[in-house]
Amino acid sequence: MRGRRRRAREADPVPEPFTIDDEVSHLTRIRSEPSQRTLGAFYAGRKRGISTFGLLSGRESGRSGAGGFSRADCAYAARKHLPTKGPWCVDDMTSEAYVSQFSSDGSLLVAGFRGSRIRIYDADNGWKVHKDISCRSLQWTVSDIALSPDQQLLAYSSLSPTVHIVNVQSAGKESQANVTEIHDGLEFSNDDDDEYSFGIFSVKFSKDGQEIVVGNSDRSINVYDLRANKVSVRIRAHAADVNAVTFADESGNLLYSGSDDNLCKVWDRRCLAREKPAGVLTGHLDGITFIDSRGDGRYFISNCKDQTIKLWDVRKMSASIKGRQPRFFDWDYRWMSFPLEARHCKHPNDQSLATYRGHSVLRTLIRCYFSPVYSTGQRYIYTGSSDEYVYIYDVVTGDIVEKLSWHGSIIRDCTWHPYNPTIVSSSWDGYLARWEASGDEDDLSVLTENEQRTSPYRQSYTRHLLL
Image (cartoon, rainbow, N blue to C red; front, side, top):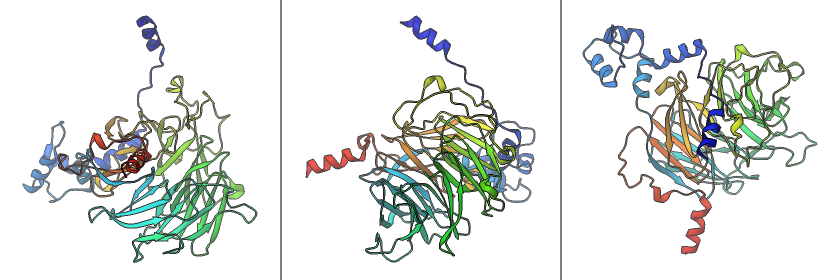
């Protein structure tokens, strides 16, 4: 038996060493490591790392010359204190948490649950519920949420061709669809489509708040013009479900999309002749579950059912697909384990800049993001995982620098505060959990092992028996 196990291990393919494009590595280091001025003034000739105390004492003693820190210095100091303490409970619901998102200023946290509920929390006021929303015409679950840049409107979607809009700054705390408040419906279907002709997986506001883009199960990307109150763009974008779509930058001209056809595509709205993309990026071996833009119109990341996150540069895209998409294995991520023999397969025409491995993407469309610019210089990539962890990768080295562990079920989404060292994870166990860089872990509000569960329904069933 031991001999057979030894031979099996020896037969396993050796994983490729991590590599990354020099340019994006350099740009990331510039944003997240001490500036040359700081290095020269404080630590000339020294090669060891710089502590936060060293940076602060050097500034106070006047050795910085200019008397302050650069943005990169601030990011370097802040990223030394990752949010790994806790977790503390933000909320404990009786249905799965599917999506979560901080507002752009970090004052609000929005979370969507399978049980037709969305809650908005006041992050500056003890995480109290700012708005409790009962959704309208929900099919299966809240599939995505998007807060407008001015934080006035919330868009939410489900597995139907309608996105609903709620005013989150209205006076009432309770928002029951079309009972206490109107939830306007934006119709993305054609006139000849039925009510449930397709589902929407991804929703994003443009930076000016005047448009909403969606990706759907009809293999399409649609853009809704809120001023004209109609769909302004329809693109038959992919050969399978469009699970992810986002604006590339503040201009609103470029879109990134990812699909179950294994492809990432770039769309330039200024030239959409014959629904042809500006370019295609190949490298994934299975369906893409999420896309996050670095915000510069050049780089983005994608999460995938092939159990990887890939980093892309749109300048490396091709005008069309090179050859037939490879299919190395036959499986279904919704109910099967990932095939062991596929762990280190590589696309023959991989155009990505880097590949990050370690997390797990099973059963649902798990999401990944760049860490915040202000507090980390986007030095990290973080993601939920079906193995119940939040993973934090170093963009430059590919290393897993932290794994946040407490949940008892899949972590489908997580969100990092844009300024503070805080991460909130949303899990199918029904918990929204908050992780901080500091705090008293003996605090009674810290979640304990006794509160862990694999499903929110276990708790509701136990409560019913006790009653």
